[in-house]
Image (cartoon, rainbow, N blue to C red):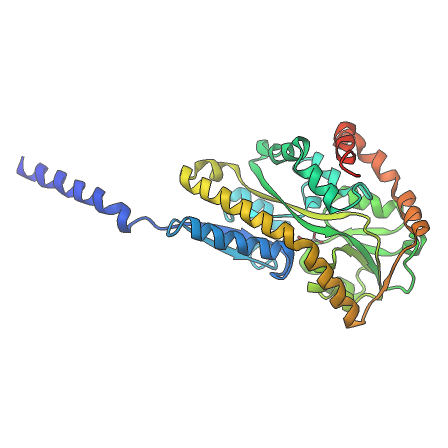
Length: 329
Ligand code: LMR
């Protein structure tokens, strides 16, 4: 009897003191492929700062930039395996998980980032967060980067015919593949971390990306010409592992949701400024020539890329395309 009493008393003491010292913070790994100086890099750091402020001692947020932990090829798989808790792939990198998100790759769909933002925050845009639940993925936020520009190792890039026969690095997206085929060019899917070297060694002749990605990866140092095409979008969906997310203590999930909202506002407010800053830096560096396009030039690019829309309309859904277009002014 006496022994049982001791055991019970001991257990009670233990259960009182456990929460005070024995609960380790939940480790939350956030992995991405770009530099810290970019909008996504800054958003991820903000998320860490706010989450750790709101949930002191309860979470340990670890951010891994520049493909340090996982590159393009591995990050989705790692998320599903629970090796990382948040990733923010570009919207071009989801087509193995859902065809609908391909909408963001349709060339010349959006007039500008403001139109992109209106669509993302609309009921149709927000519904895409839940599109991959059956695959174990939950979207939690859209983060902006900006509009894509096109670059090559050639002197002329004002017209679509200047890309004929050239090799372009693309993200893992069938829409982008079709876009370059429509131009008569040769697309090659490749992880972001490999692009600089592929451009430098001539494995590919060109690529498409935002000013902040071009500058932070030094693509302008290994390209001759960058045309201001604004023909497409690099934006992100921050995604988490659905099972992990739903299994979190409610207060932690709530704190992380708040931190994500603050990080989203921060990244999206910065995105435009960082791209403008990096455009200036590229101009100042004087390595690649920047080619402005006339309205006629832009019309020619638009026309050349038009066949892509028809090809993917069935997969994406005509209604979704119509809904997205309604957000242009
Ligand atoms: C890419 O070209 O792969 C980029 O979209 C990378 C990124 O995440 O911005």
